[in-house]
Image 1: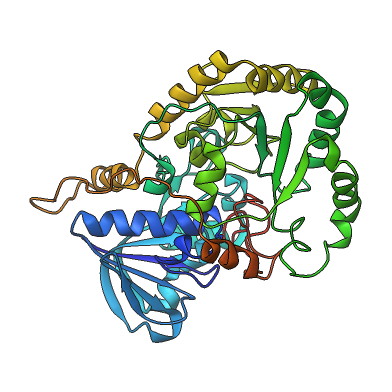
Image 2: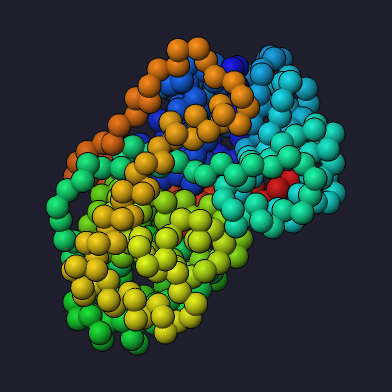
Length: 398
């Protein structure tokens, strides 16, 4: 098939996830595009890339350089307005909206009109999101994949008692930190909570002060560093994969509108169990009691987080389950799902070639790239802030 993916969020291409922190949906676009190309499809991504280039068999093309071209399939990433193919410059016999937002936003106004007029299908990121959709457009669930760097070879290890949180500060992060200070830290002496956040790490990266709305939270964390709280700057994929492998549990407050939970899928593939609220997409990712725990309240967060941090056998069991399940879902598997949905594949398509990658220690160059990158936050999502404010990429439609 000749396939075009349209994305109107950030400047990026297939090389970006290795170079700097990037939002989950943008990494997904790069992952799916490369996987489709590996299956011998003709794939073009049109977005805000700074220049035309070929990466892993995918043509990345800036909006301003795209000429009128016909495709078999147009994948509009996030925005229903992209279904018009840039005012007709992208011609396609079939169109699909790949959405990670609240389906209620697709039922009225310009969004609903765009879906009707273009007779577009819908791809949802999980069953929790799809279950909310009450419209009439054909819809399928296409579960996300996990990049090779997050699927390391199985290794015997017992990380130190470190918990990781990757939640946007407004998503109950202050409540989680107070639980840590008042209840978890006293139960697990020496445990640490590493908070990956593009906003809270701005002073660390010489990227300016913490925004006023997060200043009190920042001061709370800094004042309690002696109780294991540490602010961390989000890293490129390889750095985040290493961080997940060096932790014992991923604490995720959850949010009703966060259906993608990108970082949970990534950390699971690295063998990191999760403790998550039963909201949004967490129930699509975490298998309760096997790969982590889905909890109803604060008391449960404290109890199970402390157990995983202190009980090596429990961690080992859940780590093995999380890794073995999540590592099976590569982007090559997603590309095959796309072919099956559309009933079309390339003859003699090659076997899936993406393999789990070893995660090497970060170099000084890797750390410098992360430290120097501002990404104009808070407008953009980094791995520390899913899905926060992805500049219309993830949660906003239109």
